[in-house]
Amino acid sequence: MLSYRHGFHAGNHADVLKHLTLCLLLRHLSAKDKPYCVIDTHAGAGTYDLSDRFASVNREFAGGVAEILADPGLKAAVPEYFDLLKKLNPQASELSADTLRYYPGSPCIEAALTRECDRLTLLELHHHEFQNLLVNMGRDRRITIRNEDAFKLLPALLPPPIRRGLIFIDPSYEMAGDYFAVVKAIKVALTRFNTCQIALWYPVLSAWQDDSRRLVQEIRRLGVPLLQAELNVRQKDETPGMSGSGMLLLNYPYKLDEELETVMGGLYARLAAPHNGSARLKVLVEHP
Ligand code: SAM
Image 1: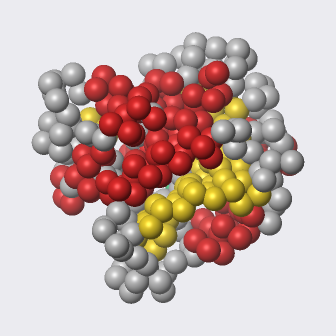
Image 2: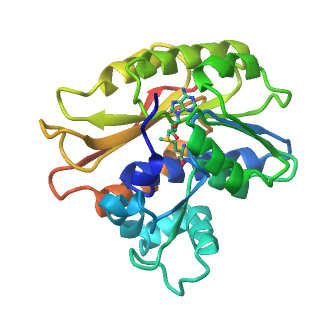
Image 3: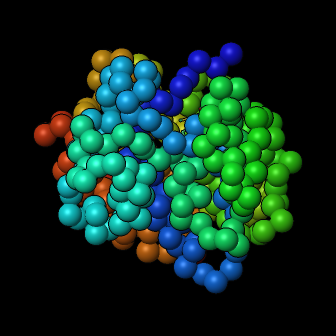
């Protein structure tokens, strides 16, 4: 049974990294005059109220999105993200940790940055999150929402009717088998829909819990063009929990590495502990 609720973590450093990256990926896909599809395998609730009983427990957004709201470099690099925050929070004349109330999850970002001709499929296994997702995103006719196990359903969705697109994989890694399941899902996706872009999020955990190095190596071995962007807000040590996270971007668009350079620099400066955190942006497999 799933107990993870993304509301506890909405807007934290990991969300900021994954959502800025998602904005850039969607910008690239929208630049061509052809429709595309997005399959968001672990959609969550769609949007989050930062004043609710989940987000207010640890106020993780205070060390994430709230820290970058005034960063001119990040605003210039990914204006889509900041515009969406403004649009979702019309009550605030200026956004800050105290005035920011609504935070966009990946489905909300996808709905905002795709076009009329594009199509979205959102999968969410947790029944309550699925209900929230329906309420938050269900009115958009471009979107199909399913209460299913993504790892079981994904093969049946591929190849999609629109043969251009992004598979966004953002598991909670709550189940022991999730690390194995993401690799298997990516292999299937590349077999059935080899031109797809894939964005995989992964956590960097304390030294004894961490499985990220093995995961990165397994994905690298697939031999598909691969870009890694990892932000560690503190050094990995024995303290339990997440010290950072990363994105693995398969079949990444040309120039994304250059665009992410500004983003990673800004995130490192704003979110990592001085002399303790680290940022890594690396092409692990070059484009042919
Ligand atoms: N992608 C969302 C965002 O950026 O706003 C956050 C997603 S959260 C990290 C992971 C979600 O995956 C949770 O809501 C969880 O209930 C859901 N989940 C866990 N295992 C799943 C599975 N096998 N299939 C589909 N959803 C799953």
